[in-house]
Structure formats: structure tokens, C-alpha cells
Length: 353
Image 1 (spheres, rainbow, N blue to C red):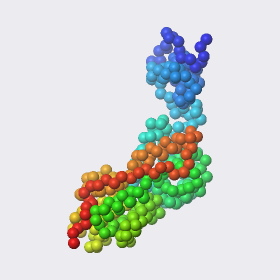
Image 2 (cartoon, helix red, strand yellow; image 1 turned 120 degrees about the vertical axis):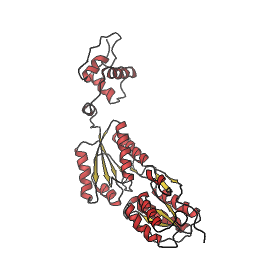
Image 3 (cartoon, helix red, strand yellow; image 1 turned 90 degrees about the vertical axis):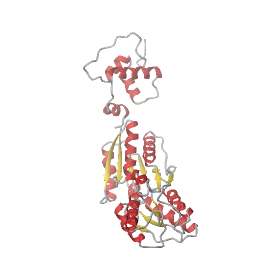
Image 4 (cartoon, rainbow, N blue to C red; image 1 turned 45 degrees about the vertical axis):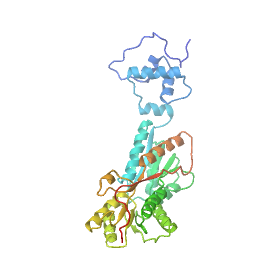
């Protein structure tokens, strides 16, 4: 007598399911196993024999069976849904991270429910977003938290759901995934110094943003270590418009030969301002951006920039969250995602005296 987990004997007759949507009972009957065994195969239970697992999968293929999310959740005690909280989601970096999370989640068999918060958000809004995703049954939450205060709000919130935080520096055991903004700023600043510029000016991102503050600090530290003058940084808001306004100020100065801009959108505005002022790039002033947006290679001149691997940030955060959900917990800051300098034609040696 065969066990419930044994596949169907050869030659067993198969029922014609044409015209009806197959259900789990149909798969179990065709494979010659119990409904519980089908459920175990769906949820990758290790106790199912390889022979039985293949028989169940073959039955699914034959019937065209597609398991529903509710069937999976009932069997596993999970909703197969993940939550994502994002800020400034329209910007290039957060948007690409979110896309990577969605792609990786889909490959892992999860749906994603996203909450986008804007400039009006505060600590209570952050806590409410986490509570809402938890109430919806999210198996875990990823928070794209680019501002220091958001990280502190998450650290102070009582989060019972598995949580992974991106682009921040909070402590307390929460897994963190972030790009190496300090190394990226060193690459940009060092590239310009190596070309022979006496110093490098900096257009920073808004104060309080983790990446902006890290890039500014790294730029300043490298200039000091090189014995170069440290100019007063100019602070933008990540937009091309702010880069244009600050670029016009720099274009009026004859002592500016190199500028490191904290993101490519602001660098677009800087290039515009320099062109209007008749300042040649890189003949008069060299410009280096950050992020390597798709348009960077097609600007005039093509922009030298620092590439951030946003896809890897999103994918790694998803893997880390699934590990937490499965009890394979890793706490604290994960290895930083490396940055890469992409040299194009917007940077060159300083003009000759």
C-alpha cells in the first residue's frame, strides 16, 4: 500500500479537466498524493521526497494549475506580501531602488504594497505607515529612508514586523543597506585633484540627507588631507533648477576650475549655467556629478560622474528581508554597495595660466 506522499502509480487513469479551472484537489488526485502534500510542494517544504515533488509539479503542468496567493498564505501562515515605505520616490535613486525591489519580490513570489511619503511627513506619519503595512498583513517591511530624521523615527517606532532600512545609519540591530557615499565622493574629488586642480568646489545636496551629508564630509576631508583650500560648499535641493542657480554664482568667479556636484540632476543645471555664461566645460571648469543617470552620457559634454548601483541596493535589501522573515537574521550594517567613477568628457586638466 502506497503512502499519501507517494506519486501516482504508472498507468493510473487521468480525469479530463477541460473547461474547468483546476484546483489543488485536482492536482492531488492526478499526482496520487494528499492535498497536504501538494501544499508542502507549493511552499518548498523540505520533507517532501524529490520523486513526489516532481510528480506534483508534473501534475500542475499537465493541468495548467496556478496556485493562488490565498492558497499559499493559508498553507504557510504568510500573506506573501511585503511593504515598502519610500520618500521622494520620484527621484532617480529611490525610483530605481523601488523598481529593483518589485522585480526581486516578484521573482520570489511576493507582491509589494508601497506607501510614498512626501515633505509633509513627520515621525507620526512614519509610524502610521509601518502600522498600516503591518495591519495589511505584510510579512516584512523595507523603508527607503534617505533622511536622518526618518531613520530616527524608525528606530524609535515599535516595529514588530521584520524591517530592513535603506540609505540610513540607524543603530539598534535593524539591518541596513546603503551605498558607499563617502567612497564615491572621494573618487570624484580625487579625480579632479589628480587632474591638477588646486582645489574642488562642491554643490551639496540638502542638509539632513544621509547621502548628501556623507558626500560633503568626505569631500572636505579629502581636500584637507591633500593640503588644498576648502571652499565654502553651496547647498542645493537635488533639482536641476537649484544646480542652475548655484552654477550661475560659480560662473561669475574666475578662481573656480573644478566642481563636484552631489547629484546628476543638479549637475545638469550647472552645465546649463556655465554654457550661458560662456564658461567652457572642461576647458575653463571641470564638472563631476553623482548617480550616473541615463542622460549623463548624452549631455554636452558627456558628464563624468559616480555610478551608484541602485539595482543592487534594492535586490540586496529584498534578500535580507526574506532572510529575516525566514529566521536567518543578520543585524546591523551590511557591506556597503561600492561606487564607481565613470570618466567622460566634462572633466579635464585646469586651464593654463
